[in-house]
Amino acid sequence: MLILISYGMYSILNMYQQKYYGSRTKVRWAMELKDKHVDYLFLGSSRMANMIAMQDFDRSMQSSSLNIATSGSSYGESYLLFQQYLKNGNTAKSLILSLDLFKGRHTKKDIEVLTPLVLKHFDFFPYYQQAHVRDVYADYTDSWHLYLWDYLPFSRYAEFNQYFKVDSALAYFTEHKQVAIPYNTTNGEQLITNHTFKGEKYAAPGIIYIGPRAEKYLLATLKLAKENNIQIILVSAPYYSMALFDRTYHTRYVHFLEEQYGARYIDFTASKTWQEARCFSDPIHTNDIGSRIYTQMLADSLSRK
Image (cartoon, rainbow, N blue to C red; front, side, top):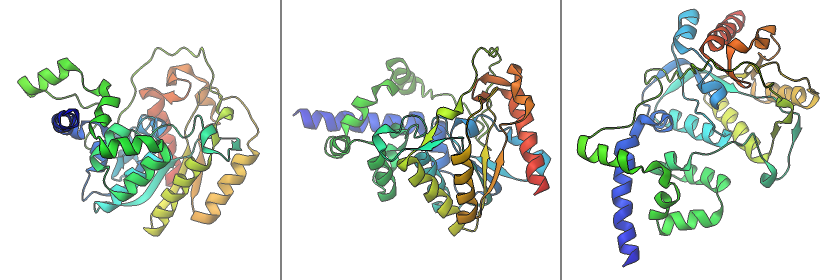
């Protein structure tokens, strides 16, 4: 009886999350894009999603572009978004992908702390039955979760119940009111307008590492781009007053990516502009002022080839 009830509740909640959230989350929007043909495709985590002024970029480059980067995303999530983008018949001439700074390499998944970031399990559930999506889930999820989600699907929504707020559900079912869309659905732009940061904290990217799981999907993404004859551009976005650290490993790894995948690397971390707190919303994200400056720097760099 409990299993039957749980399946009934699963059906209701599944319909609710499909209709209410739908393409209003950026992951869903990106996964559903079809027949888009652009010059530049932006991919990565929040340091790509929230730091590119898309209209300024296209105006400067006289190009068409899309930003399918998502906040907090791992390379595994970025890989899924990119793979689905191509699978849906979309194309791009160039891929601009985040490559944040790191100084060492872990060998075990269980000690990857920062750079793996997250896979947004809830947002990818509509695609859960696709083999390549399940493969990424398996890398970012304990195996017992997968069994539970397979055989008792209601558990997906029991675990992620913070998405199901009673007031939102009532508004949806009684007024057909849906969640607001926080990004530009034409080009994916999602600039940060927070100007409260006063420079009270410096960025210290030297603590960032790349591990086997992050590297696996970084390389898978680059391989996919190369197989589709898409030019690869790797960028390290600005940090606020970045602390100095030994870049030996980072530089060596960049050379490997350049040689193996024909990638071009552009580092934007050194400019003195990034010592101005007015350009940042926090130590690792520019606000709209800084993002427009950064976007122009990127366009200028790409124009110079």
